[in-house]
Length: 170
Image (cartoon, rainbow, N blue to C red):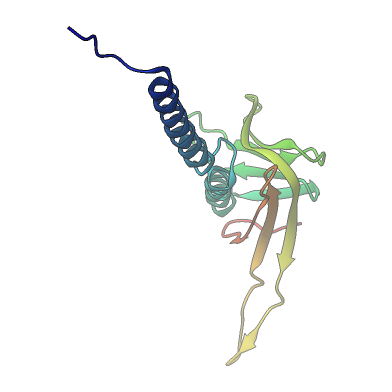
């Protein structure tokens, strides 16, 4: 009766083939994980910037008064939102230091980060002149332009222009 088994050469060859297969599978897993979006990546930053601009735009359209102490701070006075019959104070600001957050403060209740890593941000008041047509004079359309550049490795640049319906830029 002969014992059948594996020779040393067969064992070494089979282990080599298994090693090559494991290396190929491992490499494909590493490559596929690098293609996944990362936290704080371009898509996530673009979404956060869009949400920030939407919130800011809604507040600007409702504002009864607007003041801009500097190009990085916007103070808005909104009609009553919480039922206490007093107007709401909303402050949007960025410190000016690259990598810091763009924030919103509602009635002095603490700052909420809207966009985490801002590289540059600026509010620009835009005032149009009156238009005279067919004997009628239109009032100037006051607007605020917002330009934001945010992100670390892949910067996202967004801008928007909002018309003030209830207030004028001083």
